[in-house]
Amino acid sequence: MVQDAGVGNVTPGACFPPSCSFNTQLPRQASIRGRLGYAWGNTLIYATGGVAFTEVNTTYSTIAGYAPLRSQSFSQTLAGGTVGAGLEYAFNGHWIGRLEYRYANFGTFSNAITSGGGFWNGYTERVRLDENTVRVGVSYLFNGPIAMPILTK
Image 1: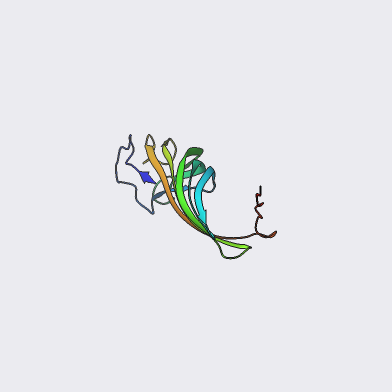
Image 2: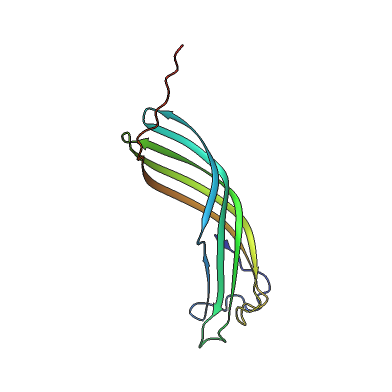
């Protein structure tokens, strides 16, 4: 996530912790993706891509003792594209391990602050949100491996 200096800031650089703070969290993410890959033996190498969604919660606040205690929060859902690649390996008929890398780009969004404190009034923050993720996982197939039918003439 990249944040810029915003516009409308009458005193740039005047607000530093602990007198004020901003906090951005991404509590939920989801994606709808397809996979295309090549399997040989017990190994699958694949590429993945699709659309990703995330919830963004941002809070701007001033801390008591430094300025009047004020706060303003923003919450929004963003959609963007995601691409990645991965490797799966079947250890035996039931256990599968996975290593996957994924990049998601949610674009740019803005927050226009009106009550986050005297420093932030009139400030517009622009944020570009990208995410790089590496995931490691293990799966267990309870019913055993999928049996492929043998085609005969």
